[in-house]
Length: 523
Ligand code: NAP
Image 1 (cartoon, rainbow, N blue to C red):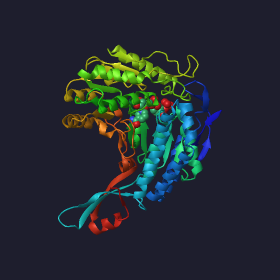
Image 2 (cartoon, helix red, strand yellow):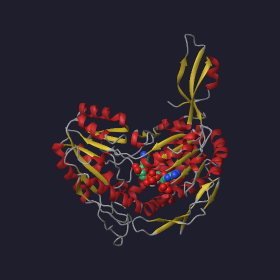
Image 3 (spheres, rainbow, N blue to C red):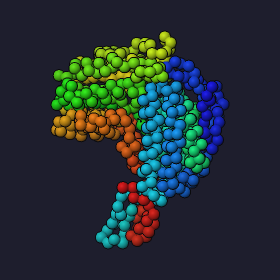
Image 4 (cartoon, rainbow, N blue to C red):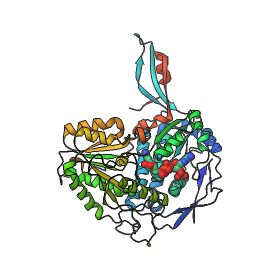
């Protein structure tokens, strides 16, 4: 039996508590075990600060970039094995597993390339020299230097590889050591990735730790120069960010939470148009990919009232050919949700939305027999499409995230109404507009922008180069205001922000210039 281990204080160990079974969510077979307990979180954070921090800060950006490149290569060399673990312990289809594992490799690689552009510097110049007063004698330069602390990363269960790698890539490039805590249900993949990282020999001792057991009192040990980055539900995010000890610590907090992502079809798009087909494909993909367990998945679909029935029909046609089952069975296109808890959550969520006046157009909360799986086994949910007959139907759809293969189609009238409906979601990660009508797209995109971290303006001409609104890219910011947590990650060098201290160095111009000369311009 595979034992999921933690790597803390430069050593591997198994926990000391009662073993927790990690399951194959398709068959409910036990595929690994994880023993919680036994981590001295205070010691783990202290080790990272005192051993990993100085080692990373002594490295240049180019050296840290080379480290990230080696980590990406270590994952790539064992890609097939990692994809298998994602299938076995995450219920991922092969393509879902690639989304997680390749996404992790791509993000490490992207930050390796960015780091190389910063060369031999160890810190960044932020903006131009600022002249203070009339003469050039007194100037200022903003600089960004590495925080002398540790970053604690708490990750959600749905992206065990990407979640670990995307957060670590940014922190490590900034020079901050990390203690990562993967969600236990899928921690096998995160722990295996960590084994590959350690075997690669690229990491200075203390630079990266994975504490795979219970979170214990990890947040109690944060201090003023530390960072806490959380990914998970709004409810857990709120509970953790409100902890008195965390508030008192002064640590920088970044929360990536859930989101009721939306897509809006423009009034100019006719049934069967290429843009129409692209949107149908994007919504169908987001319902099925990772069994809908994607924080950026489209949950709410807004269609002009005249076209809502046809759009529903086209989506139902797509969903009708989806095959739910054990992802190892040839032809299966929808895996199970990750855990029994998730299954209950998704069923409850569908029931709650249906009780609010929505109609079930396809799927629903009933039991599903997965292909290649014994009757009654596996955490399967049918790909589910719900429908509101009026724009006011189903108020909970704007407030309750159903984290599974579920989306809802609602009609709208004007551009202003579309903006109003989307923004009822309370702030989101991504919203999309599918239209070639420039006036409509401009009104809706600018109306939605203050409420979202990312807005996509989609037209059929992007087809072929389009990966859908759900893909999170290292070069673009990821995060969103309000219920999405208010955090921000990635976005190229912007992502280093939480790990760096911005300081205005102000004084005698030539002296300021001399002091700041060795910083890199990040562009
Ligand atoms: P969750 O229940 O909120 O848990 C998130 C993480 O927090 C898990 O690792 C959880 O561990 C941990 N946690 C819970 N209590 C803790 C405590 N007291 N101290 C430290 N850690 C603690 O979310 P989830 O079910 O894992 O993930 C699904 C949710 O994440 C969805 O709502 C999804 O939208 C969101 N998500 C957001 C993003 C984004 O980038 N915005 C990305 C992925 C997922 P346990 O499992 O042990 O409770």
